[in-house]
Image (cartoon, rainbow, N blue to C red; front, side):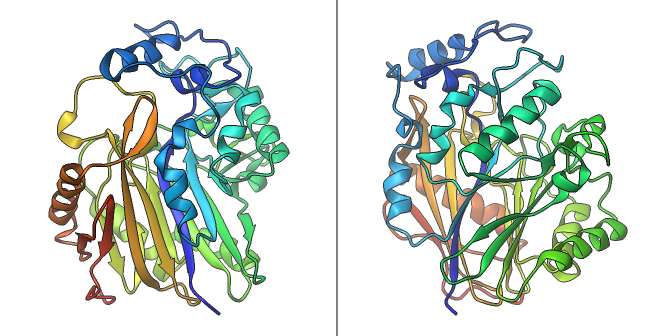
Length: 372
């Protein structure tokens, strides 16, 4: 058996301003304290960067990333979809609500997305009806999903991505209150919701291990996709590190796909397996919003880990982009080097060293220590 290369990224936010530039924009009304129309986010981005086409094609927002991903032999494409796909107007009073019109779901198909992680703090922004329409729309587009469902069993079930050689990529998605998910959103035996983790205890690890053991077959690659932590900052708690390692050690996952942070955070190679603590935003409508510039939230990263048949990390590429005019453009050399230096600082205590290899690509150093 040969290795498997994945495409993983952080938050893909296709609502609000992004939805408004697509061919089938939904109701632009917002319920935020200061912004009342999603078109205002388009105007803000245009004031910063220039005119944005309307309607934009479904592949527009992915920009240069599409051609870059096509050049790679990618077995599965997995994103955290931080947007409800619905025409519902039943918003949950929570300050910020993301939705994309169901008729725009082709924007995900344009990037050949295989699976959307849904255990996040925006999938229920438009209530149960919005969640149900999200699930129905993704099913209709034949896009897998994990982390939310019509009851607890569905919310905790793995998405199964078949590979051409008969193996599968299994994606389990779950979220924590630290990312802003209300505990009331937790799916139960009889109510819709998200796969919510109340704690990071050993008992939680054991439960996840049992869930994986039930469905796993020989040759499968298992991804633990987890929405956790705050939006800004680089701190990784000892509890997070311990839980991520336990997902690999005790639960049997092959890779930890962490997200929620608005910028790329540290990563770790633990006993030959990869932990991404925070992948950062990938597509957003934040362009033109000031504050937190020190973290470079405008830089988006596509993570391309290659895993051996046993799940061990064989290699890793990071493709670096800058979001401009709501479109991913290959990052310039100075931006790539900035991210290289920042990740070197944050990864110093955890092991992996990344180096620029030209263009918008960072690569794991060949001499990386698989015993970290």
